Length: 276
Image (cartoon, rainbow, N blue to C red; front, side, top):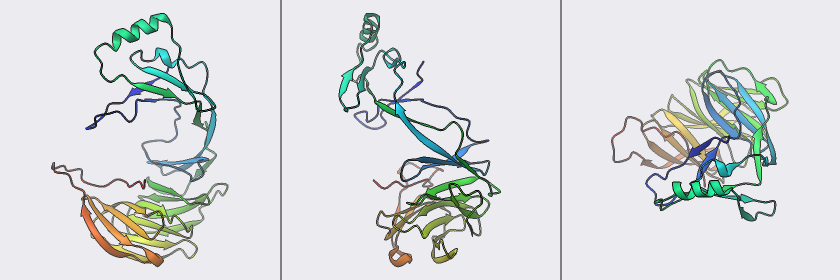
């Protein structure tokens, strides 16, 4: 049987996603997994969490198994397959399934349309590499363009790793928990880190030194470079976003915006950014 997680729109008139299917389950870590990041070339997935271990998994692509009978999964849905030419075709189902579909979808104004891709991906059953060195939980991960990996931890360090190397390449010491990290989008020699001490730091990787820093005066929970690397946005535990000019790897505050909603909530922190 195929496990399906039904999707419902929230404050939207239409569905952008019809369903999520569980394709694989791996016991990857002891305790919670806090961070997961794909490498820029899509070949690896790095994971880290409470056990303090960074694991790297190989991403394996393959054709969809023919034995998966999605049409029986939820008869209220309309199923389509995609062939190798990216052409859509309806999934054939038995007469019994069709009648069941008509019955269950009666009165539904918005039946779900499920498109089953021709190719799927999975992870290697065992990690291709395991990195040991952190003494506490991993809070964030970031890949460089060249495949190096930075991990942020509650042990007050960020560490540099490379697939194929067993030992840690560099250790970047902080005054408190390192909550977030991100490599510079155009130069692998720099990365930015956020910390509970309220400081956002730009690091020189080769020299293992801070080249500039700024004090947000709040616990930093998320950092993100602009795609050109000339700007940085910092999110805090109180829901504030601080925008910095990062030209020449120097931080200069430009503006601040509060993202707190109208409703009062104790959970105001910003947990992440994604550039679209």
